[in-house]
Length: 210
Image 1 (cartoon, rainbow, N blue to C red):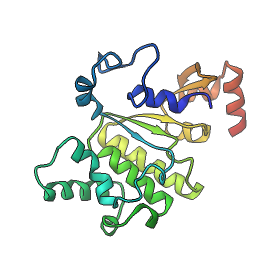
Image 2 (cartoon, helix red, strand yellow):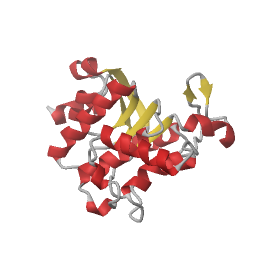
Image 3 (cartoon, rainbow, N blue to C red):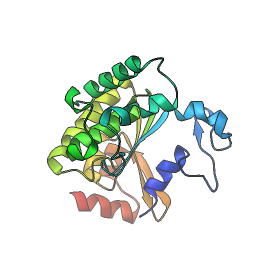
């Protein structure tokens, strides 16, 4: 409840900024008009927390993953679109037989793989990961985290990984920012912040996961 998800969505303009600015690759995207921002928005994607609520139950898995390609008109034919979808499904570990299935036919881990595939099909540079494993069973969490870390290396991705779970943060993050009551109260490298904490809230978070 401290504003982590709100911040993440504001950074990619899913929510309007009430003040301040966001700079992405040297450009102030907060001040851009929608048409000007559209090209940059392709480079900024999001993986949502709930892998069921974030998927349209009336669309097949193939259509859900293909939707960004349709929005940006990136394919010249249905065949090209299907090829790109199947390629990204393979990358995130989704069996080809799931192409025509619907979200309710998949378990939570595979639904979140669909969300990851949808986010990555546009080859973004920045991915906001809004608590992407918190709704999953513990046994599945590690699989999804390992997949995300592999994809980060392979595709040179930058993640803004939002979570309240410090064990997950330690596993995946290079730099950590702690938020408390809507404010950033501490920022440091992962190893440093686990070794030395200054704000009482950070100390409480660390002690809770040890």
